[in-house]
Length: 80
Image (tube, rainbow, N blue to C red; front, top):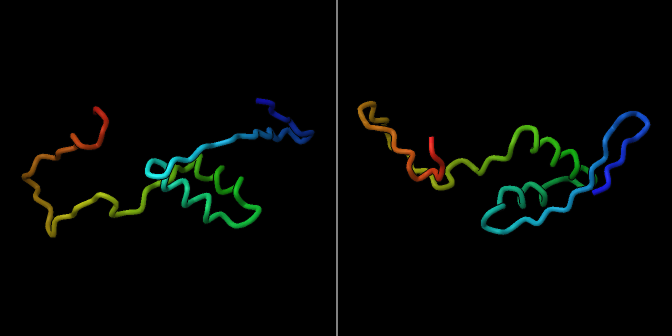
């Protein structure tokens, strides 16, 4: 991949991404919602701060928390 350094020191990087429906839905929405001419800025900001799935996706809330209950995070897909 060729990178271009401009006289002002800015590094220009060209990247090609393949976004897979079902896996990258949040990124697909981000790209589709970016205003014309602003995609690079939107992608740059998402790289800095991350992209979160919409709240409520796969989340079930109780009316009142149970302070006595043990926190079960086994279905998160990572080991802590």
